[in-house]
Length: 68
Image 1 (spheres, helix red, strand yellow):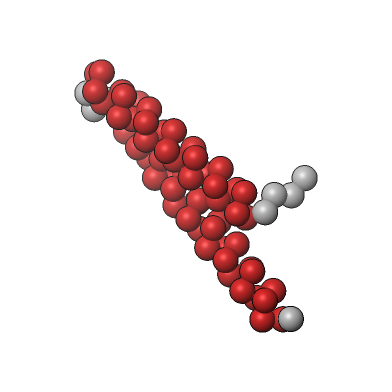
Image 2 (cartoon, rainbow, N blue to C red):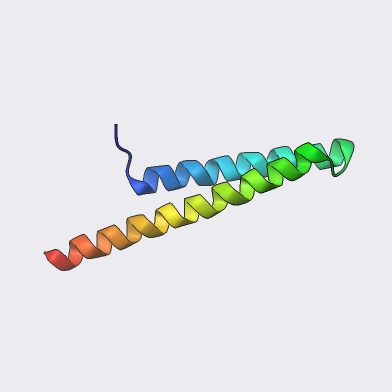
């Protein structure tokens, strides 16, 4: 089943928010450890992928609009 880039982008942004929350909680409980850095890295990758997918969706829509 194929998903639209917009759906995938929103999913990635949601995961980025979730990993950011996990990182903040982990840092407040035990300081900057391995899992804190791991959560920050995962959040960064998810935010980057989410933004890229949303930009792809916008580009596809503009191409489809110009064809009409």
